[in-house]
Amino acid sequence: MTRTWTAFVLGGALVGIAKVLAHFDLATPIPFWLLLPGILAGACVPGSGFNLKDDTPWSPLSVLVFYAVNIALYTGLAYQLYPLRRHFLPAK
Image 1 (cartoon, rainbow, N blue to C red):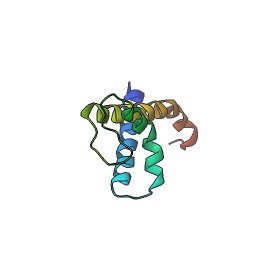
Image 2: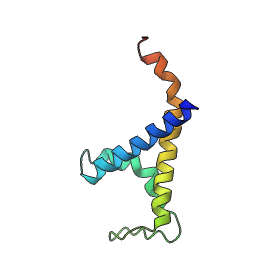
Image 3: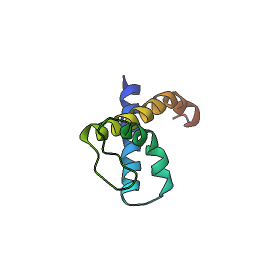
């Protein structure tokens, strides 16, 4: 159970860090590429308000899909990589 919750916290933290980097325009291409799966999924939601020509606000459902897809993706990645911590971290 701790592996699941740890992976969820790490996945959510990675999305939060990428979102903060994107908000302050730091490391510009990296947050875009990290958040791209959620951006594409959120843009595909019907009635999302996604428009390439102007910056219109997205619908609440699109924002929910954006966060859900990104957090799920990085939580799954952290869950798969979690057992490798014993291999790379020194023994205490």
